[in-house]
Image (tube, rainbow, N blue to C red):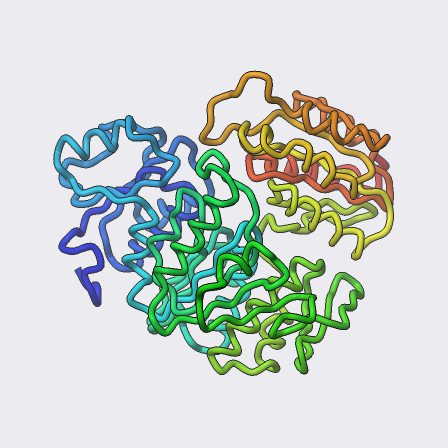
Amino acid sequence: MTNDKPIFGNAERIHLTGIGGIGMSGIGDYLVKNNYKVTGSDINLSPATKKLENHGVKIFKGHKESNLPDDTELLIYTSAVKEENEELAKAFRLKIPVMKRAEALGKIVNDKFLIAVSGTHGKTTTSAMIAKVLIDGNLDPTVFVGGSLEFLDGNSSRHGKSGYAVAEADEYDRSFHQLKPDIAVITNIEPDHLDIYKDIEDIKNSFRQFLNNCKKSSVIIAYGDDENIREVTRDFKNKIFYGFKENNDYVIKNVAYENGKAEYSLNKEEIFLRVAGNHNILNSAAAFLTAKKLKISCDNFNSSMKDFHGVKRRLELKYENGIRIYDDYAHHPTEVKASLEAIKKIHGGKIVTVFQPHLFSRTRDFYAEFGNAFQGTDILFLTKIYPAREKEIAGISSSLILNEFLKSGKEGYYIENNDTLLSELSKIIQDGDTLIFQGAGDITEMCSRFVKISRKKRDAKVPL
C-alpha cells in the first residue's frame, strides 16, 4: 500500500456492493486511485462500471455471495441494498467488516476542511460549482458529487492532494449525518423521501442533526427565503443567508437573461453565469458565498463560471437543429417547475415534456403537486413509474399525475410502451419546439434514442 493514511484501518481489499451508482462509483474511483484492491457488483452495469473496469476493478453483474472474494477485508454497500443481500450475508458470516457508503465517505472527507452541500434540490449543481471554483483556484480539493461533471472528465469524484474537500450531503437515509463540515450549505428544505421520513418535521430534525455534527468553527450558508431553513437554523450561530428577499445578508437583485445566460447582483458583487433559471442563480449564490469565505475573489469566481455548462442530466441540452432536446434529472415537483421556468426564459415555442415518475411512494405523495408543476409545459407525456428500490404499490400509477394535469385543459397522455411513445413524439415535434425528457430513472435512454432518431432525420434534412 502507498496510501498517505490508512483511512480504513488495515483493510487493503475492499468490495463495493452496488458499485454502479453515482455515489458508490465515486468511492470506487477514489479507492482505486489510493491503491486499494477493489472489487464490486451491481444489478446493472453502466458507463461508470466500465470506467472502473478499465482501471482494473473486477466487476460482477448481479448480487451473489460468490462475487465477494473470501479475502475481502471490508465491504462497503449502498443504502439501496437490503439486509438479505447475499454478499452482505456472506460478509456477516465470514465476519468481514461492513459499512454503508455514507460512513465510508465520512472517513474520507471529515478530517479535511469540508464543504458539505445539503438540501432537497440543487445539491449536485451547487457542489459542482464550488468544486470547479476551488479547482480553478488551485486549491486541489477532493470532490464527491451526485452527477457526472464535464470538468472531471465525466467522473463524479476527484482525488485531491490538499486539505480541502467538497461533498454532496444527501439527506436520503440520513446519510449526511456521517459528515462533519466546516462549511455547511443548505439550498432548501422540502418534503421528500417520505419512504424514509415521517413528515416535514422529521426532515427538519434530520437537518438539525446534520448541523449539530458540524465542526465547532463551522459556518452555515443557507437560502434565507426558505422558512423551513430559517426554523432549522434558528439556534445556530455563524449563519449567512442569501436569497431574493431583503431580510437576507446577501440579496439577489437585477436578474437578467440573454441567450441562455444569466447575470445578477449579490449586494455589491456582479455575478455572470452560462446557465439560466432562478434555481441556478440560487445555486451560484451559495457557491459564490462559499468561495468568498475561502478568499476567492468575485473576478475569479466569474472566470470559473465562464465555462461551467452545468451537470450531466441537469437540464442538459443534448440536441439542437430546428428543435431542442433536453435530458433532465428533475424528479420532484419543485425541480420540475424550476426546469420548465428556466426553459421558458431561454426559448420561445412549444414545450413538450416526457416524464418518468420516480418511485411509487413519491408519486403517491406528490401526484397533485406534479400535476400543478407541469402547467409550464404545453404537452405532457407520462411513462410507467420507475420503481428503483421499491415494490409496486397497488392503485398507484402515472395516471394519478396525468389526471391532475388534465384539469388544466392542456394536452396530456400516458403511454406505457416506449416505442409507441417515441413514434408519437416523431409525429408531433415541429421546428421551434423544445422537448424535455425528465426523471431520475432510465428515461435518459429514451432521450438518447430520440436524439438518434432526430439526427438521422433532421441532420439529413428529412422532415420528421
